[in-house]
Image (cartoon, rainbow, N blue to C red; front, side, top):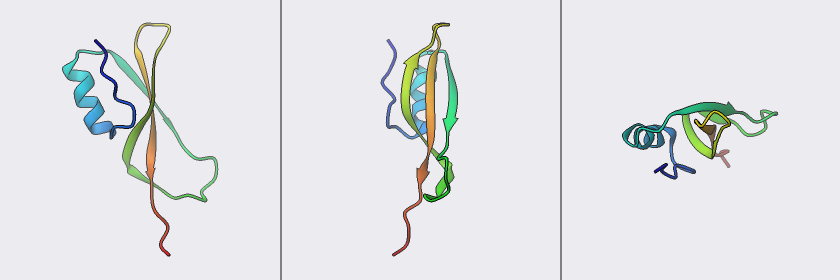
Length: 69
């Protein structure tokens, strides 16, 4: 059974996928503009779907850094 890892931090999601023996690939997405700064060290799963090859495709996005007021 494939665990639901959407919205989890990538480090935690990766552990769950390995424990479940799920084959996966990852892709990273980034904002097209730098208006919202992101933390390149904190990745989260924003989408998971099964690819044509049977592997799980995991889409990751970096955590947004809050603007200081």
